[in-house]
Length: 178
Image 1 (cartoon, rainbow, N blue to C red):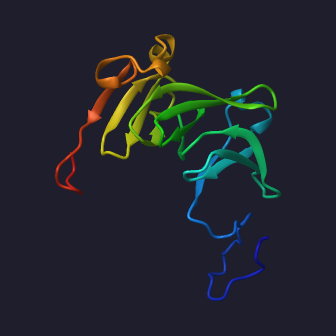
Image 2: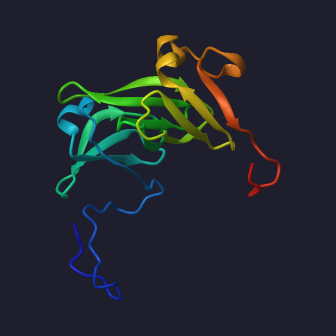
């Protein structure tokens, strides 16, 4: 339930659109869906709970939160490619592209990684993703080639999906740039 006002807040303060009871699973702030592949979810905010499974949806202007019926075990993050397609990451290793037909949200694996925690892509590019892993690596994935080669099976060297290459390796000293 949105709060009317908070003590000491700036004049431009806007109350939360939705409030959960406190837990050890913070909200993983998702995205407002814009890509046409997301059907009836376009214009709505998709999000989840860190380490949880169910994805939720809320109208971008607020309103009630609804479960989507799609579960991503050990949810860690959301991301977007260069043309606005949305992705979810799981600490269990999966990176999946979201789509809907027309009202049912689904996820298609683009590969398995080592505890992926973020996804991003160059503007306008639907085929390349940069995936950050909790272990300190950033990998580049060629999504179309990986999907065509069955990347969900985890082929390639060192257990990495086909079409994936390390961009930045781990460093022994925390905080040291690559």
